[in-house]
Length: 88
Image 1: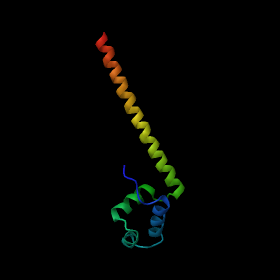
Image 2: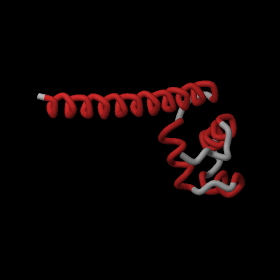
Image 3: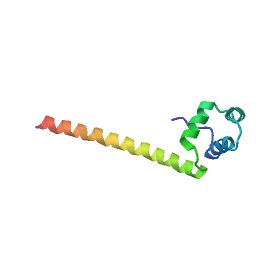
């Protein structure tokens, strides 16, 4: 997955600027971010502090790793069951 060129603190700063009353289009223009990206950030990180954002990203990464492990184990189980059926 492509990494963001913006840090958690920068994303939080952009979201905070809009909450303070600056228009979305102005903030996006100054930071070089598309408005669609801003709305995605607001949907995902709205109301979170930078430390909470970092923890959320860590949990997402850990969740992805666990899903890959489950997929590998499920595949191993299916292969073993197939081998067992062939021997009988």
